[in-house]
Structures are given as C-alpha cells and as structure tokens.
Image (cartoon, rainbow, N blue to C red; front, top):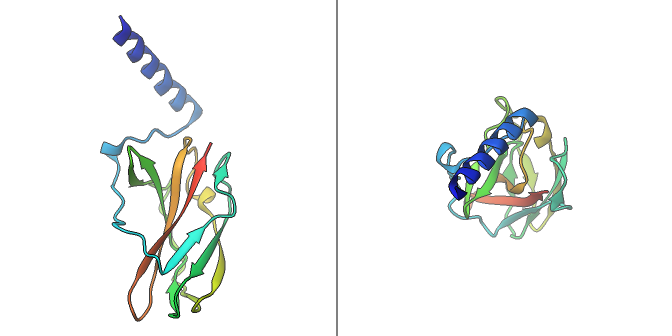
Length: 150
C-alpha cells in the first residue's frame, strides 16, 4: 500500500513538472562533469550565492591569485549537483560564444557579465555552478562559481 502511494506521488510530481514546463534532472541521463579538480590559481564567485531564479545576467568576480597573466573566453558551462556529483546541464538551445580572449592580469580581479538566463530556463531548485577555463604560459586552470536556486 505504501509503495503505491509513493508511485502516485511520483506520477503527480512528473505531471506537475511537465505542466509547469520545469526540467527534471536524472544523473543517468546526463553527462558527468569533465572537471576533475578546480585550480587554486584562479577563483570565481558570485556576489549573491542564493537566487530565487536564474537571472538574465550574473556578475562573475574572477580573481587571479598568481603573479602570472591568464586569458579566458566568454564561454562557460552550467553544472548541477546531483547525488554528490556534478553534471553538465544542457542549454535550451545551442550556445555560441564570441572567440575573444580577455586578459586577467597577475594578482588582479576582473568582473565579467554572463547571461545564463538566456540559455537555461525552468531550472529546478538545487545547487549549481558556472565553470570556466583559464589559460597561461605556465598551465591552465579551471574555476567555478557556485550558487543555489531556491
């Protein structure tokens, strides 16, 4: 009897998600994050880490903690935390970024506007992160800015 209630509740939630246009993330249907380890050379953060919904624009604060200059592009990946692992969230449509290299001077802080709300809609509550790659002559680094959608 208890199991039939669980199935009924699951079916009702699925119908509600479809009716509201929401996404449902299932780890077995998603690509695991290719990021094995975040670097410490460059870090990213958002001024606000708890959001009601994904806004059209987010301001990334990017910090270079080294005496080395890095470059980075406009591109980023959105990932979601499910069952203690990160997974890539597919955008609503294909994303194209301009091939522009931005300089991140040694021991400097840059502010970068990104527009995830333009590419990702109807995200369920959860823990997310924006991931970017950074490049230098001494090696590459990967950074992420985490946030929670309520």
